[in-house]
Length: 187
Image (cartoon, rainbow, N blue to C red):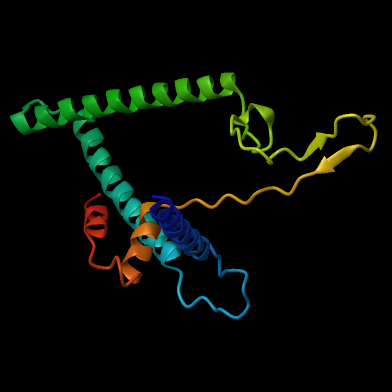
């Protein structure tokens, strides 16, 4: 039984080390490395296209709004059903704009009343992390308070997700065709 326990412990330890190493490699940023040169910025390109789409949509909305406003302001004697429909739509649009302005003003007032957002620091006692070794200094018992703090090295926390585990399982010969890997793909 102890052999099986030891083998299981060793296997899990090796797997956790590999997954942790994979996660650390995934988090490496190459932006600061001078050996790498950025060929294209897809995020900026997407943002540019989204801005173009938004400008085009605003232009079309503005044209439609202008047409509706002209129809609402016209005072022709013969009111055809199309003209009545346009006037009704213009009134609805004006009411929607007014409601949106009121909602925006209410939201801004509420945000101003709440105050600015503050990010909690990781080392603050109220963060609820509960990890040991994360406090910057701890007093040594039996010594005076001045100069008697000992610095602990902060443990580095690596966030591992399911993709990292799947990557490691795919690259191991023993688990590349295992049922565990196929179940992980389904999640």
